[in-house]
Image (spheres, one colour):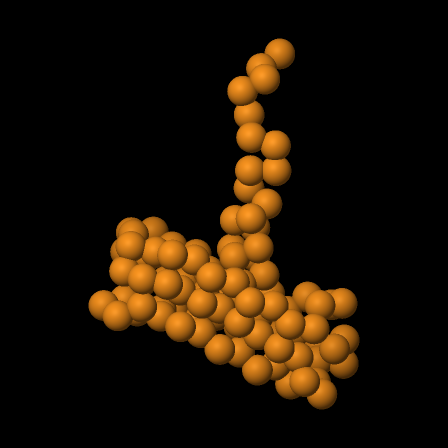
Length: 93
């Protein structure tokens, strides 16, 4: 039995990868291009995630407001981002 593992080591990364949707682009390593695919989950009214990449701070933030989602993002200088929004039923909010 190995005792050499990190318990909950990936949980903090799950927040910015899943809820914030901040992911590196395999075609442009090192967050030169950032893939953004936030998940607006039921039961959570707002979320904000930050990641310090090699070019600077990346921020993905959203808030639900009367069936509308206000999404804000910060992309560091000398970087680009590709945004994907999955269609969801807004009556869930």
